Image (cartoon, rainbow, N blue to C red; front, side, top):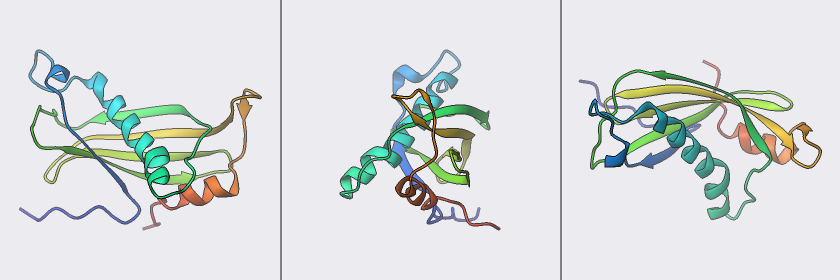
Length: 144
């Protein structure tokens, strides 16, 4: 077996533990919990990590779309799993995130989300600020 590759520099890595209460009658983590794992990873990426670095958190974005593909069952474990997240596309008022829920050996879920910049007070889409665009582009996957 090949040694697992470390996450690329453009990927944000969020570790999490499964909880016994998330396991369903089939013995694996129920699919409804995966969007929560992705949400926790996004909150860490856009809010907690910047605050810890002394940067302002990124606010004013909402989810416009999620897609999720389940690759293999995720089992309860004492060892952490991780969500690796990166940006695949940046536009004037939206960007796409890609995710993998994985461990060192397997990918359990692949997912994408489209996030849009949103003006809460005006209740409408808006363009990204220069600071938001700069932050998001830190995680933009290099073209292959």
